[in-house]
Image 1: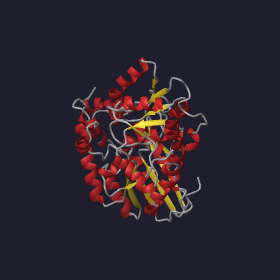
Image 2 (image 1 turned 120 degrees about the horizontal axis):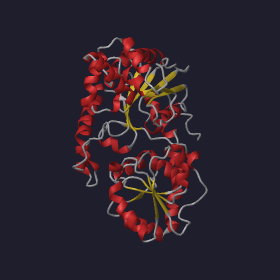
Image 3 (image 1 turned 90 degrees about the horizontal axis):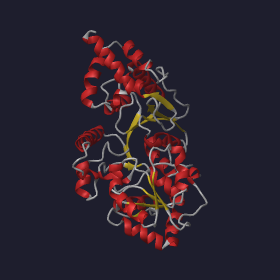
Image 4 (image 1 turned 180 degrees about the vertical axis):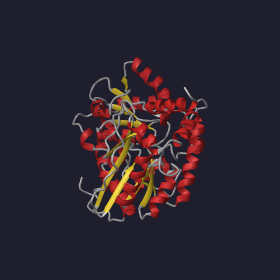
Length: 420
């Protein structure tokens, strides 16, 4: 087998596995070889990956409306789609969310779904998609500093933003978290910071990524939104775009803390970030004393989470970052007692914008045991805090506040958004 043949086979095999998940040191030489192939070969590779079952799709179709918003490509926790629906609460706005999906992987719903390997490798798809977005949409919301069309141009979201703007499209960036959260800043500010972990190999990469993205955002001069208030410490000129959940999906009439031994649930989706290893010894001790029943939830599809939260009394979110996001909102919408570490900066910003208090019981790794014992001693008080959760989520996280946050960027009045 010739060197070129071996390279081509390695390229095909890497794409079957999803080369975007490979280490950079492996991915870069593969991409150099791929870039030298004719466009038709690139498209054939992307379109014929075994098991993906997705040919290069047609370009996105723009909706018919005065304001046409395109959101992508991250759709983290389904938020791209939720924000698209929130934007449609505004007068004259129609929106389309775009997301990628890997073969065999769970994906949140999106309006326009593209196979990850097509997104990563097909120049034909990238060029046609870019033209369709340029011509069909008035506004674009780029998520997580990720490119929308990685095989068209230099693969930079900031270059794409400049190109779209040159074609009359209004562009804003929305940041979800690690792409702009600066580890060195967070580590200096919080003794519980996960970035203080000396054996976490991703810290150096995350630091470089955040510095690069912040520099790109600042140089672009584009409007910036952030999904959680803590990110305003990293991008101070940004606007908070609240995450969105569907309150009705999580609602229950069953109050928490009615059973003698309460069920305590924790979803360690990112153990380092959430502080799972730091809190589990506390929970194991409380369980061994017969005071709680602890359930760690792993690998459960999102469709099953409402039932899990309804079956819980106390939900533990995270104890290292100092903010709250989609998971905490879902637990609050279910009327559970949510315990987490939420910095005063976050609580204060929410208070200043909405006039409401975040109904999350404060705890750190050090205080968690005492906080849980206090909740068990004052169950009525704990239930009162939990009962405020559904109303808070309806007021702040059902899409109406998010629509208002998007109104200025979209150039429309923030009216007609107050009906749930």
